[in-house]
Image (cartoon, rainbow, N blue to C red; front, side, top):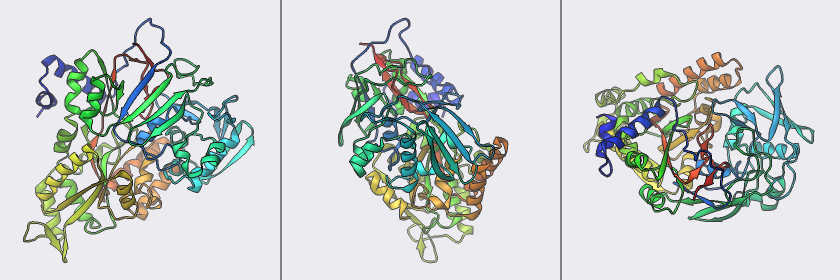
Length: 545
């Protein structure tokens, strides 16, 4: 069925013009261009008011170096700042650092820091604060693993003087600037970390344009304007404090409920609008629709390569043939996103198109692979080998989208003789099982602008962290290690192409779709933009009402 047909059948009736408009928008995204924000031409930004944002998931923490997720990073984007930020073309620009240089061997990076910057608690930002952040990123004291992973082969940091920090690496690390931009390496206030200890993630203190005020669990986070803010980067449209007085983030997991709050005027911006409603929302002059495919990994499930029965590579390969990705995209995203075939999205520079030919949907092929590997149908239709049933269980966050896609996968796998048990639970609980190697498959997607993110999910050193598929392969480890220290981009490209091929040959992941995130804002919201990882940029936002 065509994209137009899917849109026309889903949700309330809408005009042909609405459907065509939605298709035009979606195609523009898939071809690499995003919708421009709508601005009030010639109108000066208004001061004051509150911008209210509804997110689909409540974060576990707001500590950048803690066990933080995308929604937490989204909130942190205006509380904290990093040394650099990437522009729309992926080039690193100054933020808290004003300039940097790399040693000839690529093992030392020296950053000059911005003077006059203050943390929200009044303490000074300087090289000691950067060193403190880097140290807690690698010592694990904050409880997270992402910040450490994005530092690659980090060795130590050196305070050269008050406004100069030098980072030393054991090997060259060309992906450093991309890692610094992610948000996981945002600079924290040493004084606040010492004061709050392990509770710092509930009382975050950074240098950004908005200051943490309160967190009501299960409901919302409130931020207030940083009146002293005067160091915005050149990429921003203004350079003083933010325009709005407050930013309120509400947590509304159910998609239609989240949309209803926008349509009733209870919030101003929502993330992840329901796919069936995109067409009519685009036609409605009260709203602006933004469709962005963030760079990084697709929406996927990391499969447990260490736990029976998926420790059998033939089982993993058969599952890849058995899963009807097109059905998943239709059921879960209503055609807004595109089918994924590999461990990286096509929006990232090192994407290898060869993955698209490796596992086309073929249930007959899936049965053949299982038969040849000795998995024979049992009395109840579930295959058996050496007394082991072809059954796996997946513990997953209790999120409507994740559950929808799993139900489609469950039906596909049942047709070839495999049983998939779905166990919804709290996000933290599901991740705890995955880190212990007790989860059959683990839901995952990841934002990142450099293919080094493959190291997070497929290098054995990250087992117990973000390698939640417990994939352990010396050949893979060596390839990823070599690629992350290669300074020649052309050579890195070939290495990461080889890595993508090997990951899929081993069936280490089940890619489902390249998520195009439909975010919707009230037309009264002006100045909304998106960063290199497609997080909301709220600094220039003002409300026209």
